[in-house]
Length: 173
Length: 76
Picture 1 (cartoon, helix red, strand yellow):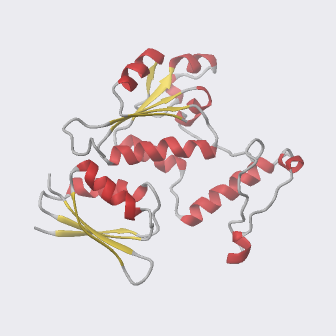
Picture 2: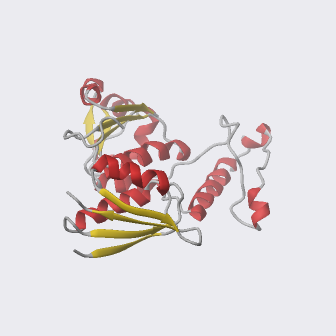
Picture 3: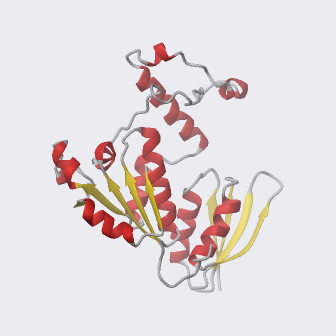
């Protein structure tokens, strides 16, 4: 807390490298919280994180590769909803399982009152968070700047590092 | 000096501090905002927000139910 109330605003620099529903949350939550605290914030979207800048997004989550992911039911009696269902790995690769897991996570989050990823992204934009798309991955994946939400900046590693060099907090997500 | 009320019930992190930050900008210096929240995370987050922004947290207490009532004053 040593820098509280200093004249110069603090700065948060985040690299968002993943595009799944679960990993979309942390950068947008931290960025909007920091912006609400008066910080300067920039998120550098690279690799799969780049997809989070597309105008229409429907990020999914897969239990496959997330073996500790709790699977809970967002409906039924309270005791039923508290059960953490053990999911055999073989089931996780069944077609449609990702869609089901995504649906369950979205419903559980909505029931608890968590804002959606799009709401959080809109909040970040409204609070002045800089959304920076990585030029290299944009080219590699065949995106164009017009694919992304208005206000998206496009820059490379050096430009992000220059911004991050003066940051108080730097995170790779 | 006036007091604005803000309903933060049902909202989870980071929305309570986002809403407070937005609300503070709409009131005059010296005015207060009285908010009611249900997320226990605000017990740590609102004081941190106040320290970081230099605004004043006048009071914060748990009500009889599961609600948390706090008052923020815009001082700058």
